[in-house]
Image: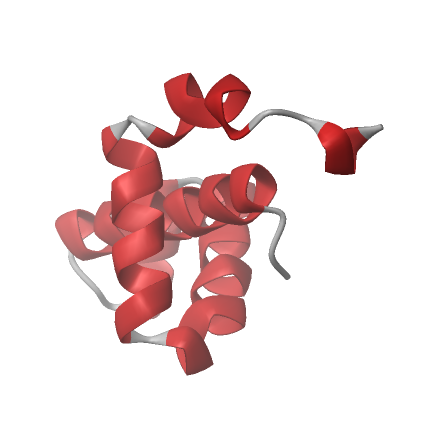
Length: 82
């Protein structure tokens, strides 16, 4: 059963920069988690460059949002939070 797993089994997944970024964002901005994931999905669907041009934001900003959204999704998947 998943609930009976040893926490040590998740250690390789929690000891990553992506997990740390997701955890940090979740801790600092829990009310924005759904929004950043939704926005990251839009960026992923459109492509970062096309999204940035359409929305009038820099490519760097679009990529930062995409990475943050992916990090939050990763954090949620590993931590099992919604």
